[in-house]
Length: 630
Image 1: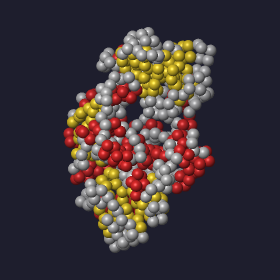
Image 2: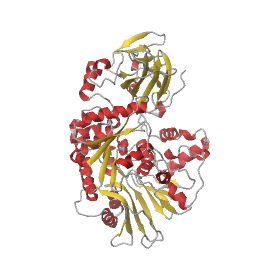
Image 3: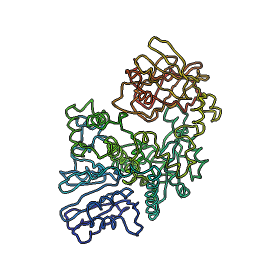
Image 4: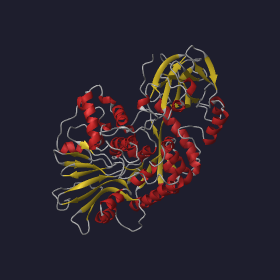
């Protein structure tokens, strides 16, 4: 397809036909390619290309404002005889790669390299962390476009177009923001229904799918939902997590009628045929959950399938924001170096510094982003625009993907909350409460329902007492009290809510620790459990650590500030009578500072005892990197 009077041509696959329209009273044109869903207030029957052409005729501001109310997975081109500017959807679900030397833009990095061969990147040139390193790809000279930026050819200029002003939703009440999001959400859904896809959606025990279920409660009868779980024993943190998801989803199904099925991972996984493996190798430069693809293809994979996802909810949660909330260039540099730490053993410090500061200038991070935190924007553009976009490319062999909150104006609403409200996931819980309150009742990554969590928090009952309410396979055998240990070895008991562990502010100094112990093992086999601490900050690393001990011997240790997601632990080959302990150890003097007490607060949940013959020595594994145990 020729692009107007320019020298550029647009090639596409047969499944999606782009719409190319002239801008009235102008020599420009607009092209829209991919799934583009209007979420704005105008009720006229118009295609997205018609709306964009109309907006472009009014002015640049109107054109960008129209982009802000478009969802889906698409690109938009605005051009004339000299060239064009390219815009992605809000989070960059539709990946874009380009080569200035070859003068080619494509949807996939490997496709561009097939069209014009480029030199492969080496570890010394930043290969190991390219997915988190600005525009880097496995090929030198092939770059990725980040969302919220336009790319103008033939000069290949990059310009940030969002944010353009302070967040206009901060001044609204929570209810007004809920109403605004739901209006955009419902209007986008109307646009989606005009396409008429066959919808599928994964449901887990966490917060994100719960939010989507609530907002789509009136439509779930037309959505095929699924949960992947495993037939294997819970011998690893991953398997325990999958089993926990199933238990919580069973509770969710009692609250809302779902067209649901479980995808059970067998002892031996299915494999893709060679043709699909070859296609997959061309489609993506990332990998995540690839074992699921054969099951996706078998159960839901066809051209009209559309998978509803929830990755964009990460923007709601301040996943990469430091606890001190600082927004300096040095803080951003430390965060970026942590993200690209896999390059450290190979790429020189000078090269890493240059790459960071070059990216700061290219992607316009050097100045303030109005009232948005730069780490928040960094997550949006790197985690979603780079990593998540490649996950969508990976699953394209089974179905297309939709992020219902992938509307820039929706994400603007989500980012309007305070730091504390975002960390507490307030907006998502409020959305559920407004749309389908009952879905706030089952626990989120916790087998206990809302009543049980409040009961345990207020009454301080032991995990053992509440275990009787759950499946006999699940054993929450924690001792009722925590134990505080001072520098001289003196120990005193502490009363804490069931499953909670933290270092009190008055005791946050090196040499002191707090521990929670499970009751001694009554069986031979394995014990798996989850430690959840919502705090994460690279600048706080080295302040305190978590340890897992077996019979008072430290077997596994990780930094307390390393990550905010749950850590799944498996203690294997336990003998009868052995004791397992989770301990928090203070490493820096933060005595008297309540903020560090809050940062260290964690919960120990979802423990499962699995009886089996022991084989070898006791070992502890977890889905986080272990530090050396001193």
